[in-house]
Image (cartoon, rainbow, N blue to C red; front, side, top):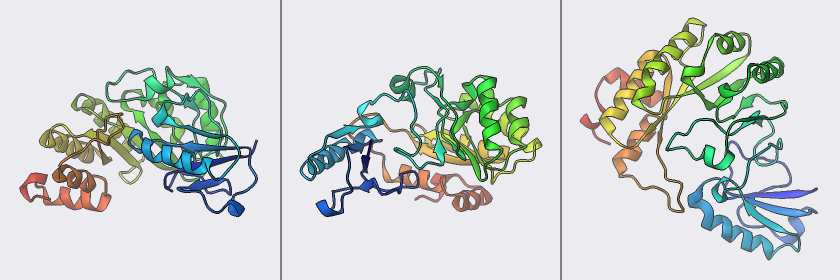
Length: 280
């Protein structure tokens, strides 16, 4: 089936093939022959824009126009390579067995389920390390043929064991992304980062997501601990899964930006001051 996929905007993940479009429809003669149009919406606060795109595309085609994506609670029970993200970015599992109160994944995708393994160098699984050892070994075997390998979904720090570390040390790893979203995660994160450092991975390869937005002093202390342990922290403001994007004061946005840019983070750590001491 020939499916046109429409996205609100282009980013580093969206496909770039001839059936991928961004924003409003072009002139009818510029639209390829197709059977359906899918409007894909990731963030819940973009739903109104996605609905407008669906309306506009319905006026430009006589084929079915379907509106969906994570923002609309579309089921994600499988994975079609190259459909809604670039073909080198893959999911080998769906779902997660945890029930973190800030995460929508279990509600949208349910418990972890393993999928057939396809070729790709960016593993985007929500919790890859919850998969069985048999499944993980299949993924590692596939990755032996890949370069620039990234585990981007956020590796659960207390599941980073010797089996995983031994496997990835034999691969051409570009980035390993961990997750340390609460202060309670810190001891396990520090231990995992230390074990990865012992295996030869440096800060430019070990990255760590960190949820922020409740207490700036405590959040910064956690980010600093991640940095001192040997990983590059990447701060993410918590957003409610609502139709309106969660608003934060300007100082929070500035704080997040500083802890998302490696050069700014390094400079900040070298100064040794807390963020509030020199403002935004």
